[in-house]
Length: 404
Ligand SMILES: [Zn+2]
Image 1 (spheres, helix red, strand yellow):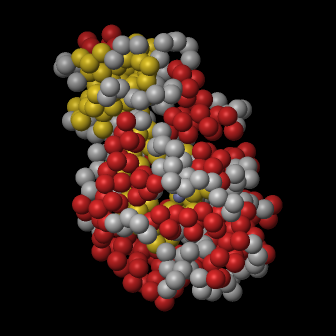
Image 2 (spheres, rainbow, N blue to C red):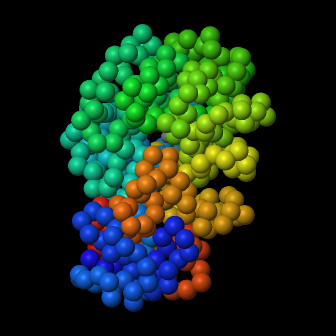
Image 3 (cartoon, rainbow, N blue to C red):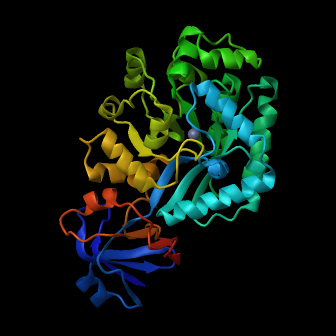
């Protein structure tokens, strides 16, 4: 198949005006000017007209479990109150509710042009029941705050459920809900089995207060439910995270949030021999009114920055286009091309699939989407500004979805 579009935005060199992509099986076979492509390749021609053809987008952090909680939790006075509120909502849901919530999430993500997701799930045992219509990385979200003595059992349960899955990893939830022992066990599994890891780190002011000062709403809440708080009052969240995992395999880690960093944290980051990957979720960040994400300082230290939607318990939909627009509002100095990288090339790197996803290049997976693009000179700007549903998407060279 030859897919022709007004502009092909490859993320692998300048956009190609009147370009085309050749797809064979699940792969991209060739990309270039339409006139040249059609003289060297046979096959059905799909002409997408006045559109930009680009790599499918990759969501580096989401929780499809909670798609059904859209609009259910208004912003709360504190982060601890929000945790209480989501726990109350979760208590009302059954396994069937979660399976349909995840299914709806995948369908919605795809409608918005997302062809890959790094998805955290609290229910790894449900994953075998789910047929993902896009590429999915399943991270088992692990929490041992109420039973730290069961850390080993919790990890084993996740392994048992997820090992038959193609792309899986582990997600010790956050320092305040997962013990240092649980982090270490996840790190050990990652080294043995070469899997990816993700976690929430340094997200809120309350998390910083808890660990640095042994005070605040989150500290009081977790103490009240029986968490051992002897690790509080000494270090920053980042300092504790690095203590727990060491810095042997940081590129295995995808770290969500990282809003709350002190100057001493930046010194720690500067000294790291390798880098973990960072995910910022602009609209969820706005919902919680966190302090500003330290983009420039992280970029200056060469961190790989990706965007994610987080869950619909703190966001209104799963559109990465809306996420790019929110990011642009937050950081108007960053070019649209750089922003588009944060949902294509950068998450592909974070997922260790930089040789397969995130670009339109021969040999790469044929994950492609089309976005209306009337002005020849501004493809990146028009893509970032795009506010609508995608009407053409290809995942893995097939399953061409036509949406209304
Ligand atoms: Zn999250």
